[in-house]
Image 1 (cartoon, rainbow, N blue to C red):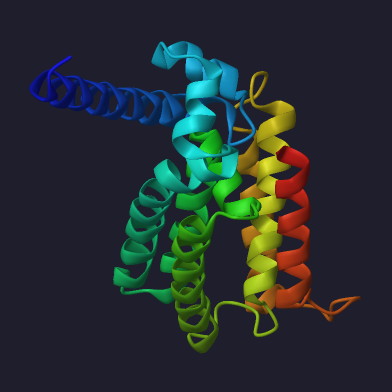
Image 2: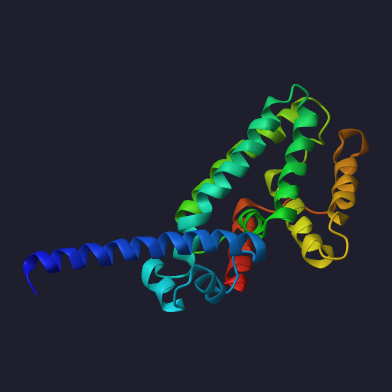
Length: 222
């Protein structure tokens, strides 16, 4: 084989590899949205028209694939939700809008449900996207507390608890009653108004406890 032919063959292999990666990315987003981030990689490979080994060869691991395709999805969705919440003139309305938007994302997308409730080891880019969102979530909470509408002892970690409970309801009742989470959220929101506040029986989770729980949930999912 001539040197020129070898170069052509190398370029062809590179082009094939790039096409395979793009097909895997498209299939991964589709399957993750439908089934969550613990979806079988074999299903992703099947839809991409490649062998399962190709997924591992190109992305290294499940976490590598997640960190390649999910961070932009998470950043865009979470960013829009916080932008709209902070744009609300009424801080309480913004707070309720944010809760509703995130819970809608959880109900509509397995990938987003997992992104806001779990933390996967070795997904640095996804972790960064979610941490940026959490910083802005704190702004949404602070505005509502300062307005006097949201009970003053509500924390960012309590917000995480809302999303965990929504995930459980979506998983349990989604096929039978896909909107059951909306009633649950309405009950929670009514209980969060400052006028209905009573002393809470235990302290809020700490940020470290939330991270440990999310990592544990991610490990179970993986």
